Length: 194
Image (cartoon, rainbow, N blue to C red; front, side, top):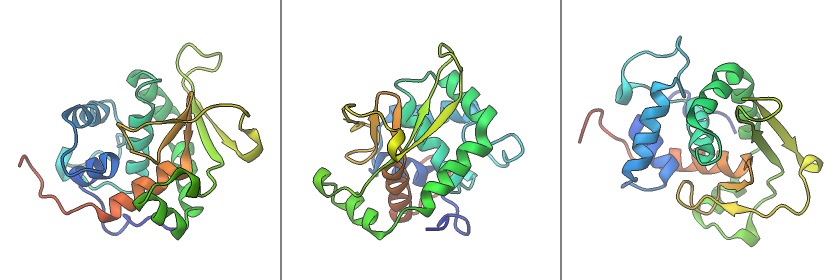
């Protein structure tokens, strides 16, 4: 799948919808996205044109926001800032590579999330914080690299039913599929306060 938002970028409201899956997102989610924006996530300094609601979000921006929101509970925002600032190109490449692996079967799963019908999700990233031996970086785990016996925890308050976290692992295919398919169905929003 190619970046569906390259020619028609998303608005801030559509990004919020894609992450929350709801037309009425929690104020906490909106506050977190605004705070991340002040930290430079998802826009690199050279990309920062326009203000807040008027910016156009491509897949790369949506992916950075999704990873940051899902990781918020186990990596501090300042550490996320370091991870993204130092590894933005590599992180976006991982997101685009994962997007190329998403097929139509994922769209059916996002619409009707039944864990026993979930397509294989063997791509994960692990984020490290400032207290790890290699601070503020990420690792890509694929297929056989995944440690057996880890339980899966659903991040229901962030990306219901589909974005799964295991410890500090983020399941990439389910995250990317959820963001993309919800982003494509997100209603148009007008810039500015409603």
